[in-house]
Image (cartoon, rainbow, N blue to C red):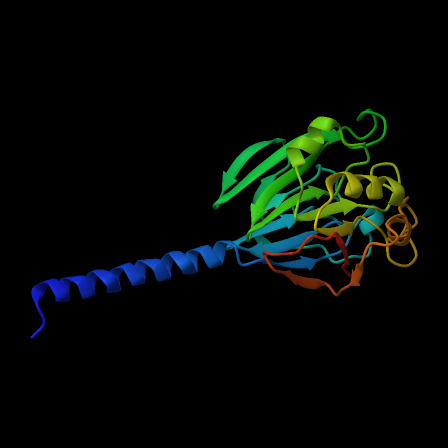
Length: 245
């Protein structure tokens, strides 16, 4: 017959193992990577770590004309601005567009103001750049800006695992060469270009396609993917460009 000490020791070990399994499972849920779905323009739904983040929901106007509006549910919505093609309230979730520090649903989100145009914001005002961690990955969202990054911006954004950046040019978005300069400055592991047109541009759209950006990033590996991709929490060194369709 086993001694009381042995019985208690066995139970303690079993309890410790159970706690360890729970902690391991929780850690895996937090750091298990993400799934990203593109709705076109600069709207992406990022799911991982038990949370969902929707970027730049749009009305189907301007350069987003003809696209299906992302009327989805998300934990939080991060908008670059309140322009109709970058921050339309067509989706469900906590809507954030103002710079600041936020904690929502276990996510720590940081927003920084930056000029939305090349004129110090005199034409389109200020955009918001976003940084957060999800699924074990550091994200930076620069989907709606055309201004060069300041030294402070670079420090605040750090080195992202995943950089989401507008590349289509026009009055309020980086063109291909400008976006390439930002990528080279931040040195992310993955780059997802957004805010560009596929095929013929709508009549009132001043943006171009993704090719000028890819040309400016010549020599960088490019993956032509579909509308959904899965990224692990360990991305390697990079950078790699993920062109979502």
